[in-house]
Image (cartoon, rainbow, N blue to C red; front, side, top):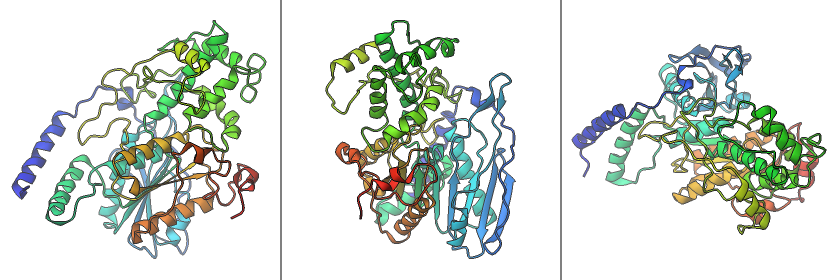
Length: 487
């Protein structure tokens, strides 16, 4: 039996272990100090705002929080997405820190919810700092305003990754009932205090990087797959890693010129015959056959190609190359068997191994880029657009598999919506997501969702219709709801 004395002894031991294991190889990100930038307006809303605060925390992060006049005692933490990293490669100037109001600010206040948002103390793809900054702000709010009854967390894109990492930290752990449960909860609180975690009651990651480091595997798979496809018909294309300094004027234009029509003049919409295999490759690695993929393909090519030639350090956030494809079997269709075209692709693709000790996992410490496990203990409602090829739908499939592995899929509901853009949601979709999460957290009514893992279901032309509502002003309504069957 775990007595109080043994509990405290174990906690002390964990402190010692944590301190001993705290050293990690230095990276450029450690020494970056990001300037404070100009954030958007933040004025009280007459009739809704009781308290409004903007300040800078002890680590240099800008933060905002707002409490409504009819505060119901609950708090929503908002985690923003990727801001960028280095604004000017020539001078080394960094992207300034800015803080956003959540898209549903007015709605939160109308419903009686306080909210809080941090700029984070660092930009770049630094999810560890995003989690620590967000948790730090939750503690600031509790100290300055009061401990909330419930705390929800939501975030977009990289903010979805922040959300996932935050809710997988201690003290977010589901303990059993009874005497063992009481001891478990005490121990979990100690671990939460040691790790800097915050207790959350529900989460809504939107267009989130729920596949964590798999996002960077996806970017690099597309590059090396494209180069191999191009090399099959153009021997001048040569893949190299690390990339040569002249990659942007040698390998890159040769690859584009081979895979897109008219020696690359058709980029990003018109493909050469071999380029059709490029589209097939992207379809597979982004989540499989599904509606809206075809419309999204040309939209995202310039962005995806801009990531080619990276060195695998995620702009200096990790200490070496994080990419690994040595055992990867590249596919061009949904058939797990290998066609002759796939055999050639796998023979030609450059094989790259991850550097040792990159992004190491340490007990009670967040990785520099936290790897999500799917071991969740609170309700999670996750939504993704089908046409997104920046943070692809595949992220949801990875997270669903991980939650199922731990038997925690009862706490995960996922939904697909029909839009091309990254994080392109209508106001109605955002409100529906929040309301359904609140109902689940407060009353235990688990919302319905979509099956993201069955290929036949996802490939159905009507997939995503169920939770697509309203207009975004970007994707034409005919693609969103015009092709959906009547209810």
